[in-house]
Length: 421
Image (cartoon, rainbow, N blue to C red; front, side, top):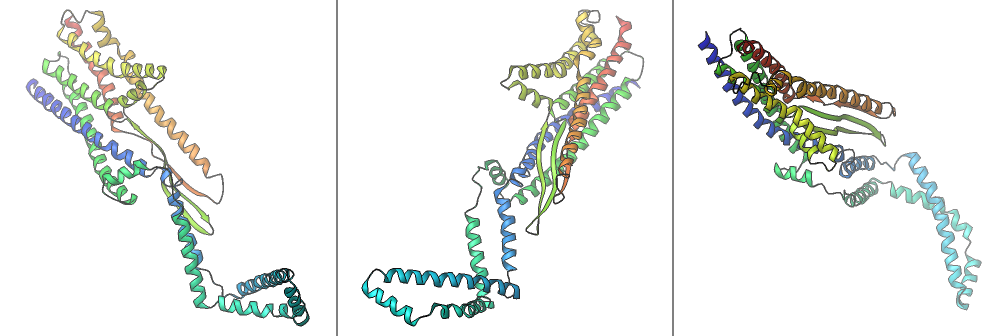
């Protein structure tokens, strides 16, 4: 039975370490994909994008121009009334100009006198309705309406070409260049496929690692006899694998997203979908490095404390278990070794960090749902669907497994080896 347990311990430990290495490699692959996906769907490339608005407005203008119909009775009446006013103004201005020019010379004054004698302006203006009617008839013919639409489309296209975003968009361009595509949708499709495959692998690996670690503690940890050297190293290596994988892989994704925003402009529906407002995905070591490289001294101090209590203390504890297990230099009677093996659990703060991350997850969920939910109440003309993509990741569950199993490891060492002191 002891040989069987030893073989199982070795096999499970080798499997846990191997799968942990594979998982770390896969999480390194998945992080850039998440960041690229968030960048492509960031609201600056949608709601705040000049190019996106230009595309929407171009479609609206084209549709409105295509629906122009000058042949309607009310349209003709409006055009005729407008033309009559303009023609009257035109005739008055022409006569004023002629009179002004004729007044400068004797010959001109004679010409003006003859015009006033033989030409009655009122008679000319009487024909304005007929002139306007003829012009409207010509303008509203099918041929001329088609030419007017072409002219308007050409002018609109000219304006649109002069409208563009002057902000640099180097990050998006680099992503498109990386995948060898020219369209955001194509790049998004490629990234989503890779993300789906990698996420499935990471989830399966994390379940296998945690399941094997629990199985190892259940199979080998149950009993009263002291741990064998092989069993001790199996436990220690398993916990180190959980700790290293837990702190080097992301624990939480924080994301605020507008799934769909729809409103009406000139009686045309406009929809913006999948607009990411905020995204962060960090591991413990990522957070530590950000804090440590921050220019603020307080941030550096918090970063050092974070990594000390959550990483350094647990590692020192694992090293101390060596002295405790082998009783090297009377390690079981040494106060420092006893502190790290038996009492350091309440100082390592690893368990506190697990709770803190979980509370951050709940708190961020509540804030996002509350704040984004209020947008719906601003106006009845705006239809908005908001989603909260915040979720706990495999790194959190691996770290949680380490915290729980480390407590059991301490109990096993304390109960099975205290009597041997």
